[in-house]
Every structure is written in C-alpha cells, then in structure tokens.
Image (cartoon, rainbow over all chains, first blue to last red; front, top):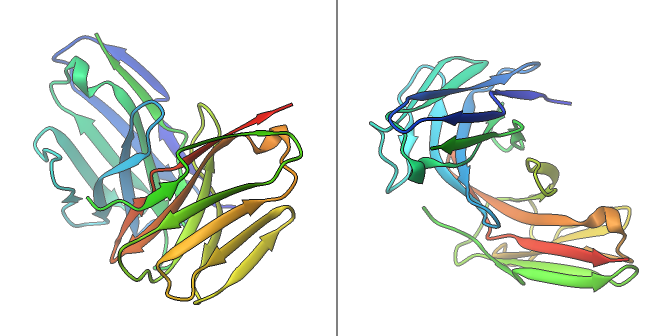
Length: 115
Length: 109
C-alpha cells in the first residue's frame, strides 16, 4: 500500500526556534498534500492544502507567514513552524493523495513541544 | 474550515456489544471516507463511499451512505478490544478534506 513518511516524529525545542517537518510519499506521486494539526482528544483540523509547484491554500485562521509550506516536488512537502511558541505545541500530521477521489495516506505525525 | 458533525463523541461498550457512529453534514457530499486512529497513532483509511444509499461491509464493520448523501454511519458488530480507537468520517470538498469531530470508542473487556 501507499506509504507516507513524516520526519521528525518528535521535536522538543526552545521558544523562538523554527522547526521544519518533512512529509514524503515513498511509493506514489502525491499531487496534493495536506497538513493537519491535532490537539489531544480532538479531531484533525486542516491547516493547509498544497499542490506540487503552486502556493499552498491555507484555512481560515491559519497564519501563512508562521506556517510556511513548500511542495517542491511530487513526493515532498515541508511545513516550517517559524518562531515557535508554547501555544504551537501540538501533533502535526501530513497526508498525501494521488489523483482525485483517492483516499489520503497519512504520515506518522510529528509531536512538537515548545518549551 | 468546515467540519462534519459526528455523534456520539464518546462511547463505552462491553466487549461483544455492538457500536454505531453517525456522521452528518449540512451539505450534499460527493463522497465520504472513514478512518480509524488508534491512541498515539495516525489515521488509517478504512473505506470510501460514493453512491447514494451505498452499503459496504468489512468483516464486522458495516458502512452506509445515506440516500441524500448527507449522512453516513459505521456499525461494528460484536466489538473486540482491538476495535478501540477514534473513528472519523471525512468529506472531500473540492481539493480539500474535512474531518468529522470523531467518535472515541472504548471497549471494556
């Protein structure tokens, strides 16, 4: 089955640091990648949708200058949390899909803790 | 962003009892997908429903898409401890996916 790799799985860093998270589709070409944020015992909240080679579409309330998304190739998207603060601590999950009406395949997630 | 409502939010059942979660949208859906997320894990795709009134089965799991394509349900027969987790429905709108609020299932041995 389709495999999505997400790294790192866990990050602990100081306030003010920028953190980059990578999401790779290992055995298929991902025309679309999604970035989600999940707080404990809550649902996945879509942050942004990115298509290869174009700018990401951010959901309302998500700061695009704080959460930088790059989807430079059909197999790689990155999310950079710039100048992270404790309130940015969360579980970030990426997913990827190939063509329309195909299911998403999720990475294992990144647990981000800002001290 | 929009969100699909799911009920109940939490469900505790004795092992062997049945379980159902319902997903409701105010708009007509092109398709609906179901995912399962184990504690500490990531969502895993279960199934996609596309046709009005569609019913699909996977062993003890039965998925149904409403006639009006505005609601869906997941029914588990004779739950087992391995069924523990949170079940999410997700709808596709354009090029975006929106997850339901989820139903957390606890199975008591």
